[in-house]
Image (tube, rainbow, N blue to C red; front, top):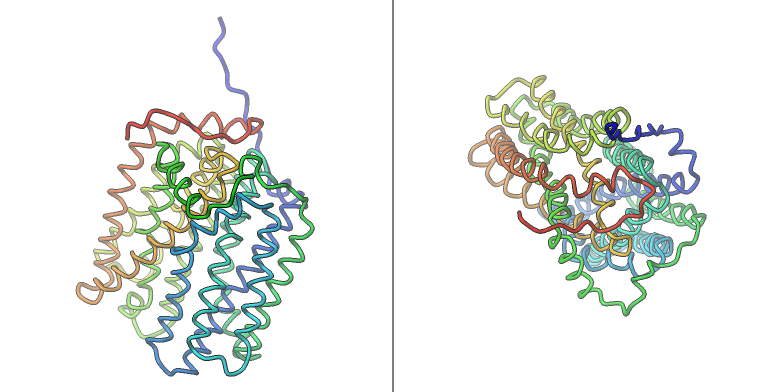
Length: 426
């Protein structure tokens, strides 16, 4: 009897992905929202500092961007499973447009600005959950992998250019006018999304809306399954290797007073992520991506350990860039997560994962900043790398035992996404 051979995996191109009109609309909406968010952060920082002349209140305003997804993200993300996802995105955009327009009014008290900032960021949670849940319906199989990679690359690129372009626009037109421009980006995003095909709410989600109960069900769904538990742990690993970005300013100051040091350091990881995501999604086959998740997660953390040797500036940039390349494993983790989550639970599952990512990043940067004042930023980055490396090694060992549960689903795009069940032994 002849040896069974696995059918060859079809290689998908970026051109095929962009040929899909619905994906182009989702991508355009994401780009508008991302650029608008960077613009808003710059404008609000300048506006608050001009109003208060307080670095503490300015930092507090920036910190508010972390709180809403952590506090309300898992709850409001459930809306994406109870209502048509196109409607959730459009309504979220319209509401955020209104909040931004109010922020641009003259004479807004500081506390009102804080409330509006909180609510604006909070409404991003159902939008992001609905977009993430809808993308697998628009792109199937390996097209989804490239679509997710394009999404990550676009987000990183918007981060790289958004602050620079936002600063220039604020300097040119003023803070309130910049907030109005951001409000318009939400309007244009909503208009683009209206052109998406109507899809009803998930069949099994046509039940009484219970946001808190849905949050508990989402947590039980993710943490009650060993495959989903492993995948969300891979996603949350970024809590360790994003610590350097939060310490870029004090780290750059160790090389000199030139702000260019800080800018280059902050751009190193996003640049590595863009390069890694492109290569990983374009030239590595689906099976290879699943198998490579473990060692790439190790690559995301290991280079940071060498920062404890106090290397020079060029070597530090290289190490941070290599960490960014390794972090491209998130493309495969995202794809496997989508394949393993039932369609009617995607919104809650993605909301939980995203909230955990933001909470971990915020806590990691906070702890890292406190330690850096005592032992220095180089040592803190090295310690974060060591902690992440140890965690990644454990996750990689666990992943070799459970990855077979999801590999068949990832490599069979014609099979509807389903929940992978297996005896929980880890």
